[in-house]
Length: 402
Image (cartoon, rainbow, N blue to C red; front, side, top):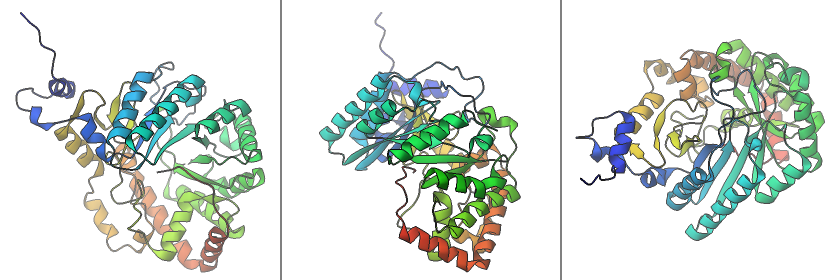
């Protein structure tokens, strides 16, 4: 008796736990799914040399697995060959990507460049988010030579940074090195209970270091960070107000990207011709953006990669699973009806769906802070003008956020 190989369609349905007799028509080939994707966050490793208390990786994730070159090349093939977008991004994420050998990045970037040339892509971006503790002069020179855009994680000066993170002094040394070399880099700060009341001081610390800009993310209780509680409305507001006040007082000696966007929206309104992957009524998670783990599983967002699985780079996708997963992620319930008559919707992020999914209370905190900050902008037009003037007079650093 001859045993036939299992068709990919049946394989993906079995993986999804669906009956095999009537579901094959809903199978979506990986090539088709990636047609509309423009940016992929690749979890190249689960390992990390730190153990930040709020890391969104689950506590029981092993510390050693790394992505294979075969898996990376498969992701690059799917994106570069099939995406309708002329500029695409393959982000190296983790874990800590710099625990990977240099040869991995050299081969990965060279492979993507060859594909881009072959298939006529204008540009393939290679961002990397690192804790910077392994960033040396030699390592930075290698990354820059490959065209990899470095993003640093830093929550403030060492005494504040080390409350939830670690190795603040080493991060500070890395920032000084980047500034000294005049290297363009991005920076992410996690706004938490530990630094929300110190943001003006932190902005001044960045200014003294020569850092020109960064972006904040609110702390999310997930993974290792489940022990942390959500920020309150007052804590969110205190953090963003401190950032804004420093930008206003110094005419943007340091630019925080989210606050810059809020001020621009306040002054000029939303720009429908430039939709963002985040900060919109319907974000682009699972639509033009996705994340892939070590095994090739595809998720709608890299913020919490343990949830919202869409399919697999080899097995493909089940359209019904895609529809139900994204519908569950992006749906807006009756809570959002109050947004219709709210003046603050002019600047509002409309809340992150992944954050709402993890804890529905998140949107209440963000709603309250947004309304309070909108009132503060309304009551302080001179500060708004100072920020707008500062933004206009300087060219902020090149970020590679979505």
